[in-house]
Length: 146
Image (cartoon, rainbow, N blue to C red; front, top):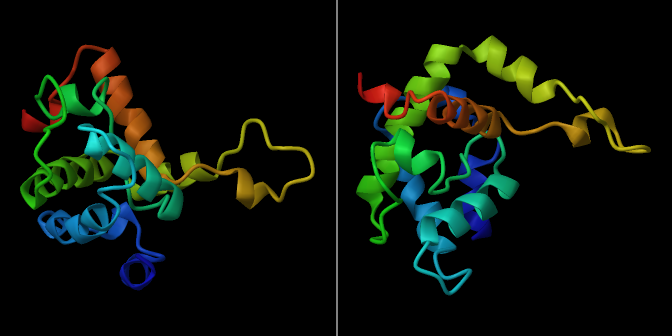
């Protein structure tokens, strides 16, 4: 896994272009067996978010799947899904704007006592995840397809 991380370390979702999500599949595939489950997208995306918090959007069936116009994340573990999902994530990030995402990621409403402020921030990919959850909560699921 470490050699794969090196090429992505420091990369942000804000720098990805539409279609580059396909290249991320190698990371997901490398940790695909981290947990014996059919919900590989949930487990792998959350693990990778902790390793690459500005790049990997943590996915779930409550917000991400409906946002992508699905009832659930696919069981099949294929690169085409990463490409589809990241095209949507890049579109959302573009709609929000890089400055707003950076500001939200760096805002620390409840810093941990004794910790450096920068260690308490959320990743920029999580800010996009929060936006997706907001779209779904507000009944605007699959917004990126309109």
